Image (tube, rainbow, N blue to C red; front, side, top):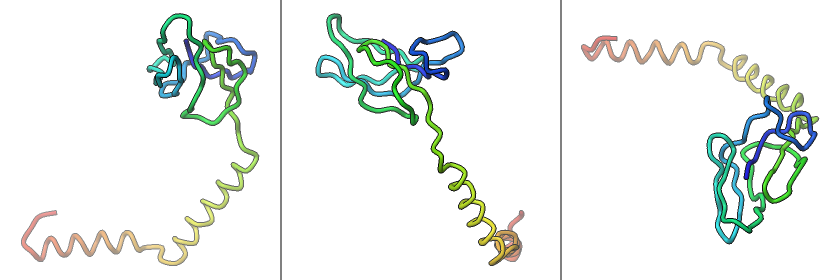
Length: 117
C-alpha cells in the first residue's frame, strides 16, 4: 500500500505527488510505519486502516491500499505567524541587546580564566 500527498485532491497519486514517510497504518492487527517513499507492506487479503499522519490533511482516497492526503492550511496560520512575530518583537523591545551582552560576558569570563576564545 501507499500513503501519498494528494496535492490536487483527485484521489490518484500523480508523478509529482510524493509518498508520506512516517505515516502509521494498521493491517492484520499490526501497526506499520510507511517507509521513505510512503509505501508499506501488509499481508495479502488484509485492508489497512490509517492511524496517524505526520502532516495535517484531509483524506481524498482511503480504499485500504491507497491513502491520499490533501494538505490543509488552517485559516488561522496567519494569526499564528502574527502572534509569533509580536512575541519576538516584545522580547527584543524588552532587552534588545540581551543575547549580545550575555555572549560578551561569557567571552570576558573565559579570558579572565586564562582561556582562549
